[in-house]
Length: 261
Length: 262
Image (cartoon, rainbow over all chains, first blue to last red; front, side, top):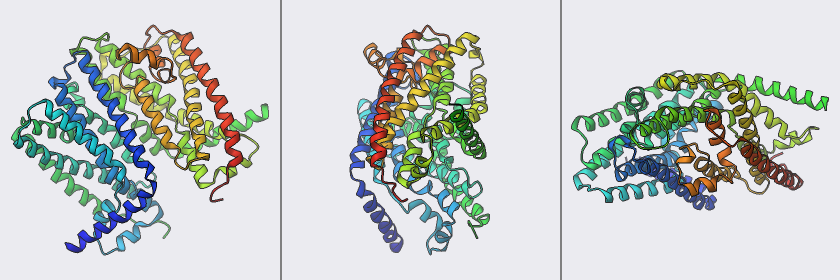
């Protein structure tokens, strides 16, 4: 366990050092994140300008959903994109061989080898506007703890989905941007699930791409009105997907034949 | 002239063959342009419950049109160009007796053609979700919309290709595109019809090229009342300015290009 912590520490410090060579990038990504957030907040404000119901969510509550979405975006830029989007490259070039040979868990290496600081502005801004939204309503300590727990579940869900998409490249080597699709669908997480029309939309964003569990449920928990079954479902989903991701990798690796050999 | 056209036809043909080889990837790119469908759901619902100048059906149609226009005007030349400058592959293109830009134009056009079935599929999905919004534009409307869309594609391409010239100076010029893309998302009407914006924002936007990339062609397509001559005029002015800037930057850039890695 201690060795593992030390390995990850080394992974992250080295990749941070490499990234910090492009320091101006940080100012730049802070600027882009801030502008993006302003644009999203502005769009959200349009709904309230015209008294749309947005599924009964108030401005402060809807802002918290947007904040949670921004945190997830930052998380994916910090850990998911730098690591999981490289899996396809490893499969294409056959460098996955070297990963498999290392005396460390393959999934761990594939998921945690790199860390990128460029997602941090999104995480910070996201936390900032969740706090702003929470200040507008009344959030209890109990709710805050439940909300954090749910947020942890949604990070796991996002990771597992991303990982599974990326792991399929072992079979479909040519698909470079399979995760783009996931990213595009995740955009639905900017809005509370109740803002969508009943029927196909809500079904897809709850059961097919569980966006509802990633942004709406954590905010509901934060507000203290998450139902017991809802929380249990979020936790169960996270656990199942995490297990499925691992199982899928091992299943896929059985078909891995390496490149050029 | 005829020779140049034949060369371009050959380039187009190669590009088409290449795109259709990577079909799966192309389908994924097309599918990742589903943001309009997401917004369609939320805005359609909002139009039902709120008090806005759009009926739910009009709102859904607007976003269907946005989807079509977005798919037809998607531009990625800056990434392609950046890659070729950074790896030094641009050198081989420069050796050819034809401006490298035609290579990129051919790629973009070919991809557009290959994408047509996907567009039909996505539009079908929209109408399956919202059968009440099914509409067929009249031939005149469709022709105008297509013409303006083609023009806006040219200007959008010019804008991005002009920014791409920064590749000769800095390594990551695509960052510029990320900034310009925020302006694009915000001012193009992709997130909401621009006439829902506060009047001063909409008026300000009208002088930038962005609304003519999505909002205006989409409004034309759904048959709304649009000042077409003004839109075409503005697109021409922006196009001309960008063309001048691009040519100037290109000459300066190529002269300092050092063919990294080659």
